Length: 131
Image 1 (spheres, rainbow, N blue to C red):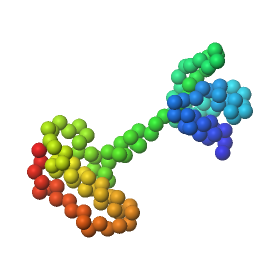
Image 2: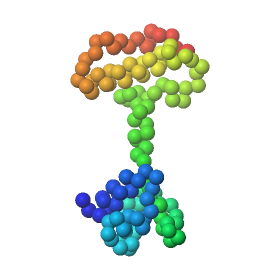
Image 3: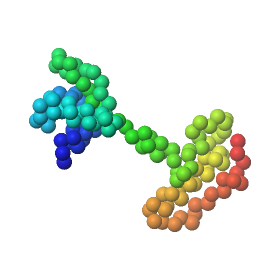
Image 4: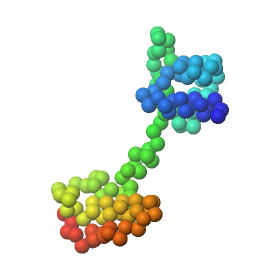
């Protein structure tokens, strides 16, 4: 693993952020080399940098950027986006046809990933009354 990968790994481990001076000390490199590595990570849009103070010295707080895709993965079932996202209907989730269809799709997706064919899964959301 090269120094850039090591630095990025250190930054990702610290969810709340880590000061840049702590990274160059941990990697046992000088501050100039660390600045070049941080610049490369910034150019690749992997991290964000905020001005901070550590032990009375001006430094930068570095944080890894979160993958936006991961945030939306929980709302996706195959190519179907969660029906409740942005829904303005005043419905009862227990009887929502669109929600039932989305959940059924999740169940089929899970069964497909595990290699099981669950014949008890029955999606009849089209027949259900939508509110």
